[in-house]
Image 1 (tube, one colour):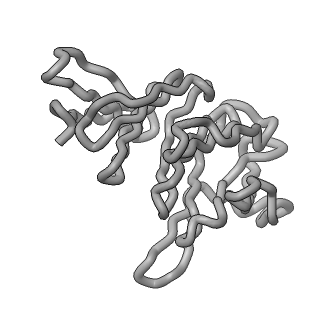
Image 2: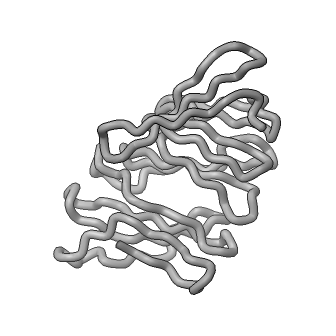
Length: 178
């Protein structure tokens, strides 16, 4: 399916999965921190480079826009994907134009921004758990995905609540924050 084989190896750090993609046509192996697919495209991240592949496993684009970009996600409509960096940056890429659409820094707290994020079911909003002020204070920020403007924030002043994961469940039509 990808023109080769894909291995997953459990690493010791924070349940990180290291993916290795071996391309039998070209005879090489790439190491990815994350590798996702939506059937039409696949995205692999190395921390310094974001690789975009077509459904046959052919590399169609390489991006070097986000340092420490480890965690990718496709939008529900499949028109964009996002990569989050633990350095406090997010990059949005268009799958139509194969280009960076928007990159911004969402927090001045560096090095601990590996919490959860997701799109709304219609893809019009992007939810990001962000560490602000200190690495142990979290908030949930909601961004509009057309202009990437900040719409609202939750848990900003709550010193006891520290959300780390957000997921949408289509069966219950609810968001779960842990």
